[in-house]
Length: 304
Image 1 (cartoon, rainbow, N blue to C red):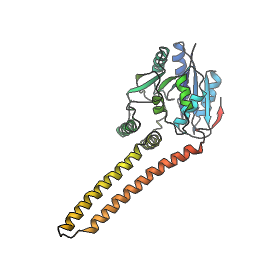
Image 2: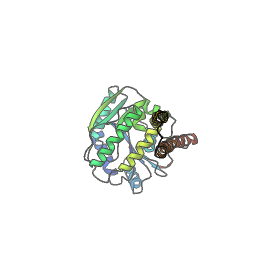
Image 3: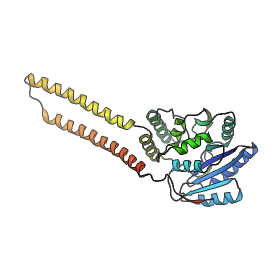
Image 4: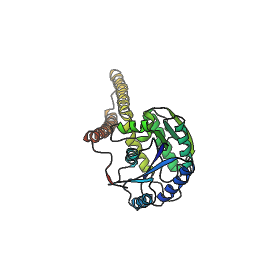
């Protein structure tokens, strides 16, 4: 019987961890699916790791990985993938906002021969207007930058062992799981799900963290910001040509050229674009520097 490995990144999820393990056990056992649960504690500040240890002691199918510090969700996902031993591996949130019943449907689709089963959001559940707007802007930016439709994308997906091994062989340190798992190809399908309400705790994603996440992954997965720099340079060049023609026309027609205001505005515009361009280029260089150093994506301090 094939084994389904379920990777669950956890950060400050002490209130939900036992509930999640029990719910998944009930659903998967009820469907006669052999499974293992892999909780990855991403340097939590609460008692998440203690809860993982207690749950693992009570259930041999529960495994735990503990980071030495917080490395981020992407690192936690890849640590879980590396620890998984099943013929297929699913990734889902630890707060049960990804419905376990949909996980069963994903597994059945995998049995039919699909190698990547993507969970797409039919609805996002209850969110504030600001958070919904910022999330929508984030996914629009990511879709344009990565050339992959991510308007309803999520980390909730199931992959065949071949797809998992392919992801783990990719060398980049700053990985973007959501885009990379779509980029690798394989026989894919999608399944819709409704985001469930969180029963305990609070969301770890604020508007600020979404913006930071967007910038990091756009730079890591696309050269679009560099193209913006080129576009800005072309615009300034055209502006300079227009102003140059205007100056020459006024000069040959015998009118005095009012220089100070124009010069000051040009200096401010060009200077601003140069500084922004240097900032974007510098950010890319810093990411290259991080990759060249070759440091590990994460450091594991404990396993259970």
